[in-house]
Image 1 (cartoon, one colour):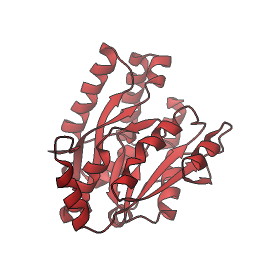
Image 2 (cartoon, helix red, strand yellow):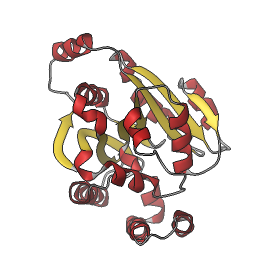
Image 3 (cartoon, one colour):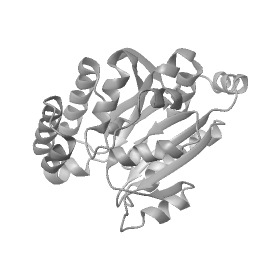
Image 4 (cartoon, one colour):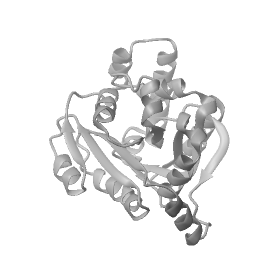
Length: 253
């Protein structure tokens, strides 16, 4: 992954950003969120996206659901999202959302990930450079909990990003729709679809935004950090050993 970071613009003047926004036509962005019983986190995720409208970004939010049994649909519609249902499987859901998206740019985002303030400024700067039309942008991974284990995991993810060029889906992904289609899009896989796709983008064409994507630590807290990290490492190893994704998913549980 390129070492070049795009900041949130938090230290830039308001006038600078207003001048940038006035000089360029409105950007059309489609945000695609796969869900399955995501009512406990979805509202926060949608709220974090609302600042895009204030910046003049034409925002389309598509929630692709796998037959949730909670209030996911109600919350999605309340948050102004389009809501569609389909076959379970994150890769399948992401691909389905991209197929119906109307935006020139796509943002793939997990339902338990909240983007920090300034994400829209980073997006505006990123899309303002023509060369980024064939790049992907990801956010900086953080967990929504305190403690040494959480901070250590965040450092491990930074290492994986910088040296392996393998950001996971919980960091979000911004990409121009034309480039997404050129790469063939997400495969209809239940797991490892994120790794597979960023490898097709290529390490040299990935840009890390200096803006946090704060992800729920619930899975780590429930199962334990060590077990979760080891399980993720085994899944990644199985992927590189070309084990079919369906079999990896059964192991992942």
